[in-house]
Image 1 (cartoon, rainbow, N blue to C red):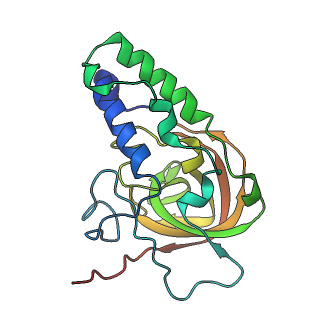
Image 2: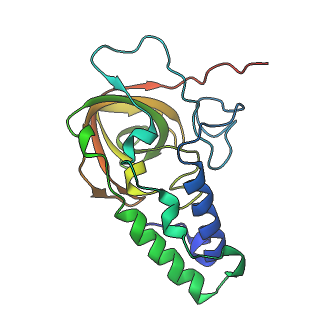
Amino acid sequence: MHLTASFLRIPGAALAVLLSAALTLGAAGGAGAQSGGAPGYKLGERLPGATQPARPAGFREINWDHLIPDGWNPADAFRGLDLARLQDGDPRADAALAKLREAWDKAPVEASLNGVRVRIPGFVVPLERDRDQISEFLLVPYFGACIHTPPPPQNQVIHVFSSKPLKNMRAMDTVWIHGTMETVSSDTDMARAGYRVRAELVTPYTAPARRN
């Protein structure tokens, strides 16, 4: 499992970030979110869950909560951990982080989604790049996942294969993907993904206007 070097050097901080991510799963992003990459988002922030117009026919719109089976809680892996007592370099923090990572890499997926044509928004983590084009990427639920923070549980990572190359796609760009969901796990250089989608369509995500 890939973890950024900075987080490997400060396991206490990594655990704190992972705990924060666990607690934010299932919560909508803040009102200040903007579309199109890094500007306007904070670490751990999710996209607002509003339905957007012009939904292509034949796709079921889902959110990231639908990818988590009933009864599974990402925070369960933190039971018994007292983060306040885990200092940088503490071997107990290293052991706890390794145990947590192992549990999240085995996080269960929602079997009922297998074979369903879905539509879901998220943040892009590019994988294979050919000049200014990508055809393979991860979709993740909150800003910074896999790049600025450790990866989320595998049931919160979708491995996407686009039907055609996508130009000028940046890390943490926000998009809708449309395709058939498969409950197939895969290891990548950035994270372990619990789902796979061969995307028929990838379109930009535009955040709803803020209310005064």
